[in-house]
Every structure is written in C-alpha cells, then in structure tokens.
Image (cartoon, rainbow, N blue to C red; front, side):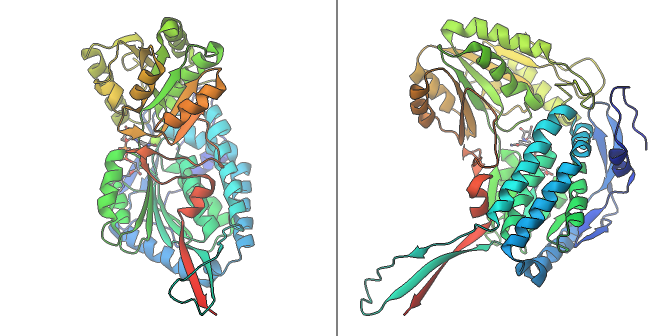
Length: 502
Ligand code: NAI
Ligand code: MG
C-alpha cells in the first residue's frame, strides 16, 4: 500500500518496505500469526487512513509467548550469558536503532501523528540513550557484604551477603503516546538484568515495537528473550496481566487500567510497577524569567499535544504577572505550526485517535459549561484528522473536572495565586503526583519549595526533561515504582540474602 502524502513529506524506502511487510507476532524468535485470525487496522491519525494491519493476539497467543519467554529465561544461552555480553548486545541494539533512527521517527509520526522532527530529536534519541545507559548497568548489578551480629549465637562467626537475581518472565504493557521510547524504557532493564519479556504495545500504535523486534532479532538475542504481541487491552493485555506464568508486570497507561492490573496480579502476587496518569502543575513565581517561563509553560502542555503523562496541565501564575503570562501562552498556542506529523516543520499533529479526540472535546465542553473561559482554542479543528485546537483556559477553579482529571490533550487550565503557601497547597491538591515545575530566579528558595511538592519529579525552570539517569515515576495515584536510573535495575531484580555459619 502506498501512502499519499504532501510533497514535503515522503517516506523513506526503509519505512515503506516495513509498511509493506506483513505484520505478525514475534514469539520465541519466530514471526507467527495470531490464533485468533483477527487483524487490527492501524491508522494515521492525521489522515484517518489505514496504513497497515497487525495481528490481534488472544489468550492462546499469550500462553505461547509466556511459554517461549519462560524457556528463554531458563535456557543456558540467556541465563548463563556473561554480564559483559548482555552489555554488548544492548549496545548493539542501540547502534541498530541509531542506524535506523529516521525510519523510526517516520513510523512514530505515521502511527501516532506526532512531529517527525521532534520524534527524531526526542523519542528516538531518548530511546537510544536509555539503551546505552542501561547497557552499562548489566555489569554493575552488585550486592553487599553485611556485618551481621546474630545475637543468639555469639560463639560462631557468620558471613552474609546480598545478591540480585533477575525477576523472571515480565509482561510489559505500554501506551500510545511515546510508543518506541516506552518500548525501550521497558525492554532495556529486562535485557540488562537477564529477565525475558512479552511486550504488548498499544493497539493504536503497534508499528515501532514490531520494527524494534526485528532489530532485537538482528542484534542476535536468543529466541524468546523478547516477544512482541500486538493486540487489544482486552483480551491480550488482560491475559498477560493475569497469567500465572508471568513474574512481573510493568505498565504505563491510565490509572483506570492500572487499578485493573492490581486485581490481575493477585493470583500469583506478581510484581507490579505502574506509571500512571498525572495532572502536573507548573508554577510561575513573580520573579521568574518570563522569556523562559512563558514558552516553557506553553510547551509543558502543548508538546506532543498534551499526550504526556507529566504534561503541565495546571498552570499557576502569580497574580502580578498573570495577564502577561496568559497572553504570552495564548500567543505560543496560536503560533504552533499544525499539520501532518510527517511534514518536517509541523510542531502540533493530531491527537492519536477518534476516541482521544472525543475525550478531549468532551472535557472542552465540560470546561466551558462550568464557566471556564477559553483565551484560545476550545474545540476540534475543522479539518480531516483528529486535530484539536490548543486551548488555554482561564477562570478555572479547583472543583472543575478540567482541573481535577487528566485530559491528555492540548488543554491547559490556569489560575492566579497570591501566596506561596496557597500555591503549594493548590498544586498538591490532586489525586496524582507525577511531576511539577517551578519557574523562578531564586534558586535557594526553590529547592525548599521543591521538597514541599508531592511529585515524583520536580523541574526548575524547565518541564518534561527526562533522562536515562533520572528516576521517573509517581507519588499517590500516579503509580508504583520508578523507571530509568538505578531504580529500573532494582525493580527487575529480586534481592537475596545469603548467610553462612563459619
Ligand atoms: P489504557 O491505560 O487503557 O491503555 C494503555 C495500555 O494498556 C494499552 O496497551 C492497552 O491495550 C492496555 N490495556 C487496556 N486495558 C487493559 C486491560 N484490561 N488489561 C491489560 N492491559 C490493558 O489507556 P487508553 O484507553 O489508551 O487511554 C485512556 C486515557 O489513559 C488517556 O486519555 C490518558 O488520560 C491516559 N493515558 C495515560 C498514559 C500515560 O502515559 N500515563 C498513556 C496513555 C493513556
Ligand atoms: Mg495509529
């Protein structure tokens, strides 16, 4: 199938060739068809055109993938692989990703709708960086020697130490907002620690995970270490989450689905890490550098169309500068180049799906009905594709659904504040606690404020800066556990104490 594009946006030969290949499930190192015989159409949200069909895995496919992952976990090729060779394979995978970076950026733009330029600079770059970062951990998963006292046996000496063992077979369920980056954040620690995985990308954006599986194969991983199954949340994700042969589930997505996974983990008490939603505040203090803070607060929400778990969707601005900041944020909203993500100068593409567009527009209507005022935006764009106007709401209050709930769209809700204590209380008044940003020139004061924010990440004079070395995750209903950094290794290993009487 050849994709019709505007003249400025042509697909590379590699991307077109990938689109033309039949899509299958990657199980046990083989490309196989689903037992269900069903396919899922893959859409380009900018055109609403079907660009591919992927397999719809069912519970039988999940059984096969879990069995393959278990065989690989126990097999000599993987379980006895030296740490330095796990590192080398991860570095090779990162190199392959880098060599195909432009193709991945195009796939993300086609499948998710996002800007191909930003996908290359952010999504793909962070994915490569993380694989290289986590590769280094493969040789540094250490325990410690413990100075035990053993009060009830003073006659003998003891030698005690800790070890870390890979948890085992991991089910990894990811969302559609950063498909490749989420896939790499998930498989990276699996491959560094010696676990195995069944990765399920979101049904809206399955393409880059399938292409990544081809690179896993090319890198030379033993069969079954990485399995990729495309399918719907139910049945495929649900079967994976409840499977007794899965030792851990790692999930990124909605808080609603995250809570279902807690029930699903019950049967075998599988380990669970959850990266869930957010309603993150950006706080602009009266002394902030507004040349930095205005575009910063605007991109905190408009980057990736607000489809970012850490998006700065609540904006608190000191009353003395409120009107000026809001006029500036509204100007940025109007200036963003809207278009098909494949066009290199696009900043704002469509949201990912008709469903997401309906959800966002439902919140826009609810906000207007509740008395919020849209300085700009407020509705869907009148053009094909799932485009929504970037929207800046003022006259909002903390009881409105647009202020309390995650919209996951290009919608910011602003409120003025007078006192620091008042804004900290307002910022923390949320069931979520993923992130927050503070904009100020008074750095000493800011570090004290940062520690009062109930958020997994606090940014100062920036927003949505994520890095391989920096743990990422949520307080409160934004999740359980942390990704990235050393935390990623800890959450894919079980700590074991060994004690010998000498
Ligand atoms: P979702 O949480 O339902 O989907 C995320 C992943 O979970 C997908 O792979 C999906 O197939 C899978 N899934 C769905 N139901 C499942 C189940 N019962 N068992 C196992 N896996 C299941 O999110 P959805 O419906 O795509 O988006 C709804 C809202 O969730 C968004 O509007 C947004 O507010 C939030 N969201 C948050 C994300 C984040 O990064 N924190 C990412 C995506 C969505
Ligand atoms: Mg798509």
